Image (tube, rainbow, N blue to C red; front, side, top):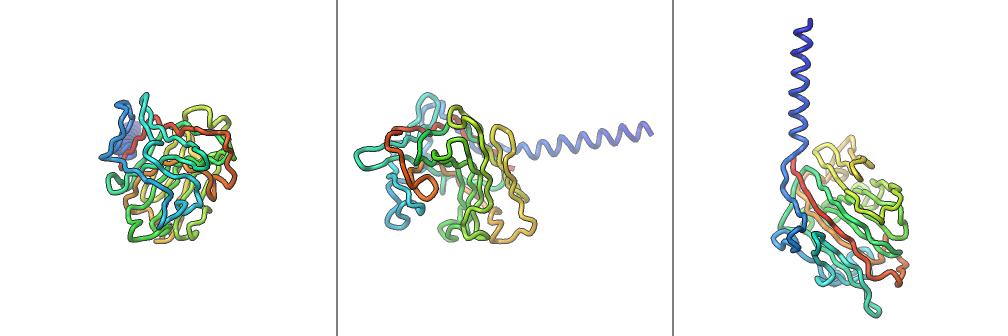
Length: 257
């Protein structure tokens, strides 16, 4: 009986460590910005206001995206929101056609900007978006924040099951979220997508009956980082006294299962 228990315990330990190894995954991207450069083999810029095809970037956003509003210094990626006369400027970068992955984790340590009208986001889109329009391509919002709700962050999924509307979402209150760096993480498997802030799980999405509409998350996705101004979610009002403001990213790490 005792020998049987020992053998069973060994079996459980082996199974446990095997699972741990699988969950850990393989690091396929680690950007810590310590060399104070933006790796253009990984990242591309979105520029302008989205016109003529997607004016206001599809959300009635007010900013023009410019390269000058993205910099890397002191080991951080900085996306700056600024205002000149009557125009707003900010930055947006993505890994489309350069880096994508299917199943794994994304971990980003970042500090959020402050001010009514700002809308920083860490998010992902399906790599077939050019052939399979949004929301059919799928969207994963790892972290969104709007300055008009200074203590809240959002984690959300957009897909065809909700016609793109935000119903698969979680809003979490975190005091002083704008004052310090926090770690935002997303874990994605063939069965679920779940979100964490500082290693605390805040939301899990796992539809019981998966189909093309509610689960377009079975193909590679690419990363997007941006700081919008105004828009359907961030606005409509913008406090013009807040500028400039910075969305600061310390590191980005992606592991693939």
